[in-house]
Length: 487
Image 1: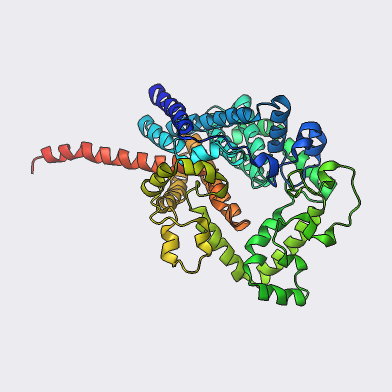
Image 2: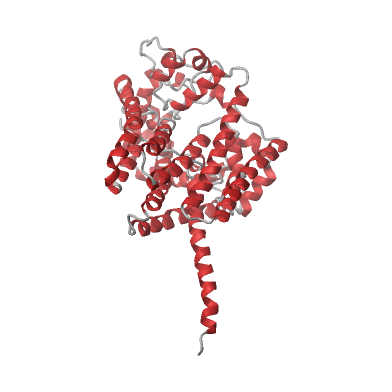
């Protein structure tokens, strides 16, 4: 196992040097203007208060940004890049070790891990300052830590697993406190004899998450890690209705005037929601950042999002076809190659040939239209389907259906296969969870959401191929015996 792992590490290092030679550079432009980020000056000079009053996002990623800005103010790009390279190497090693521990042959595990970590998609996200890539690395690490905890239930291993899980919840609002609690309950139900170590391992991470949610309930009236759900849901419900239908509903008093203001618009457009008095807290009062971007953590966005949510719920009940249209678009984007994302365009141009090769050979993307093709009525449905990665769709199908079969099969053999079974269950639930939640509440960035579970899909495909290879080798070894038998 050591030699294949060494090959994975060497491939990772060499590929990064080659991508650097090809012109790929770490992109931290998002630091100045992304909606999810607190103003740089507040991160540098008012970090503690700004993090505490952050309601639009979980705190951990902005805390990471602030710490880097404070500790390395003159070399932030280098510091961020080193951190992301560490995430990439962690993900590569975690994927390989997890496959081997799940009984995939080390050679197959090495090949699939290398194909994954040297791919343009992996490298492009590794060179972009956003939380998607660290989350993918943390999820891959969490699966490995879970398997090791299940194989030897000790407090240190359990604390490591649940600690990483808490970091995931406190980084991305898609991963809810209920997501964390679900896996605690699954482990308690299956590993009853180890209930003490499970609870002791999970209690502090869960308490940290609960404190953050309770803080938001006390300060902002919402038991959540992000107050943006209404704005996200409006994109996939109300704004899938034609403007004429929205106008009719507004005139009937069924929905508000926000149905004509695109979600996440500049705060100046929401004039009716700007009457609140100042709180005296910069991160809540600031309307715009120095570069002109709106501060989406302004306290006014809480009520704005609430109203979008009310409108969305009404449209969902009265015009469910709008939501169906929105989710179809979501899944269409979900199965595009992850590199097909606007904020990666500059680096993607530098490796265009390799990116196209991956699209054709490994993803089976037979046509190449931009993301906007999903909205283009002149392109037939077959063209839109061929524009997706057909092997991505197939790989996803294998991950979901074979993963379920494998988990059920292993669960019947308890307790011998409990670590394998519960780890596969963990992989399977996360694949389904991210798919359903990500595509049910957002339209437009769905292939970026899939990046977080691409390592899990790769592991599931590895398990599928490994079993197929094993069965073929068994058949091959039996054939000569049959031929030697007398007739």
